[in-house]
Image 1 (tube, rainbow, N blue to C red):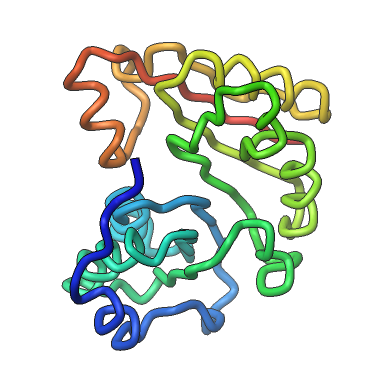
Image 2: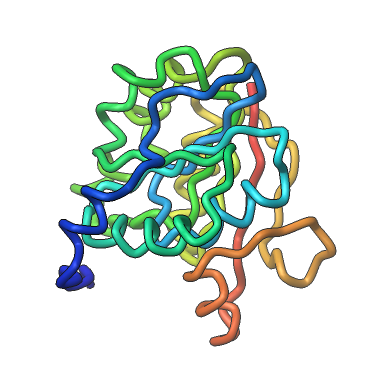
Length: 197
């Protein structure tokens, strides 16, 4: 279900002063595609000050909530973009070290498979973003999307570095998203995979 437009959305977006326009250092760059309300990307930026983070969100209504959250702290190593992931190449070609795909839309119908962010067409587009070896970290509550993604990664030549079918039962260093908190409280197991090639 899509979020309603906050009344102050346009004002929040127009006053945002941390849209991505580059970083003044050569630190690694990590990208979250679909940052939602910004909890994960903000906490990651605070936890890892020597990594540059970019949060991308397609929907301005959701991005405006993230902007409000981020502007209270505004870490130097965090920037955002409001755009469709399909258009990232024109801005981030050859700059990204790691991509995070957290609780992406599962697009459950077979006819919509190409819209899944782990479909081959998206994996091909991510190749153009990576600076070196491709590295993707994914979390989801959706069993079908997880199985589909594992197959898609394998067919595309990725190897699995870490995998969990119940992330919260393990002692992995983990920063949660808003969805993750909600689902885990409901007893839904969180699936996790870290892949590279």
